[in-house]
Figure 1 (spheres, rainbow, N blue to C red):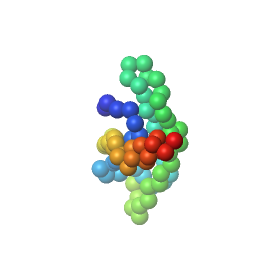
Figure 2: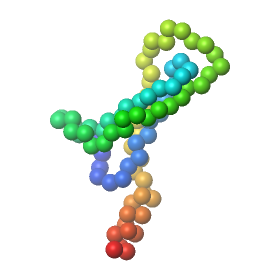
Figure 3: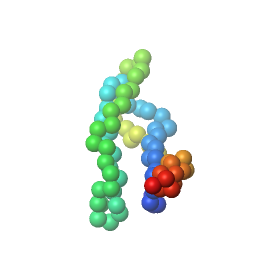
Length: 85
């Protein structure tokens, strides 16, 4: 995935969630290509899976999708800040 300079929103989506009910911690790192230079990181993103059903032996691959959104509203605010300085 190529990223252009500027303010972006990184979106993570699971088309369906097959995790057992409970609390989970996700660690997210944004790295720069060949040398894996860290550009940003979220060390602890906690989310909860709630369900009324029960599960056992839940070893599987969790499908996921990543999307970068270029937020034009953020750019407009930054442009306004630059012109008022």
